[in-house]
Length: 232
Image 1 (spheres, rainbow, N blue to C red):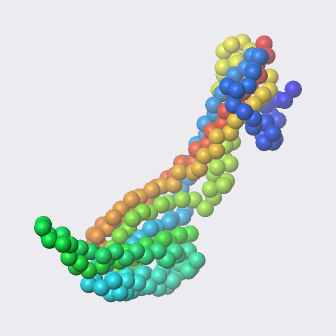
Image 2: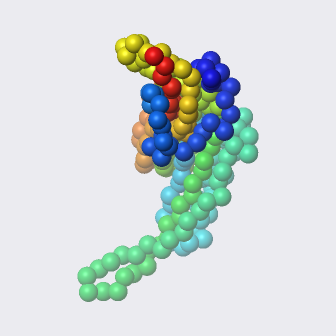
Image 3: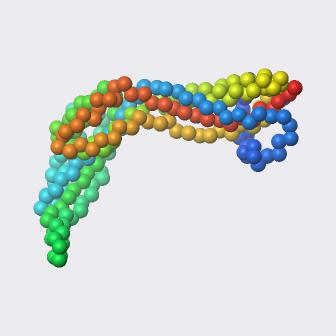
């Protein structure tokens, strides 16, 4: 009979169809275990952008490219590697003035460029954000704080979920004057770590986006459904 201590060594062969689809004709407990781990982020992904409007499409693009190039050069001086920066996206669109009873009049062009930066050193976040605003970046769309140790954190959350299921099952079995007699089925609900999101849209350099990141924490959750056999 498969005992609980052996459960952690079980392979994916035990992950079968949901219990509702199976014919369970023996005493059992169907338990959901939930595990959560709290950690401090040590990485950041920043989405910033620049929006420029000029009379011609070429001038709008040039102004946007200039701001992005200056920002990338500043990042390089701060020790951020080029492979940590994505800056290829650009969008150009005409701008029209609409007057009642008249055809729309072309007034210029709008250029938008987005830059995504991955920081492996969270202590550089303030300097990067300040540098972005200093080089003409006028949008900070999103700051996402994550951990470089995501895999290990998820393993801990999964272990906590298994332990939670075991504790619940043992308590229920005891209250029924019965005992656990091994594991019949495991259903694992895969989940992803939840990063810390800080959203902001900055115009004319007026905002302090990074003020709250220093004390941020992130939660990694996992969940398992385990069917335990019961024996009286």
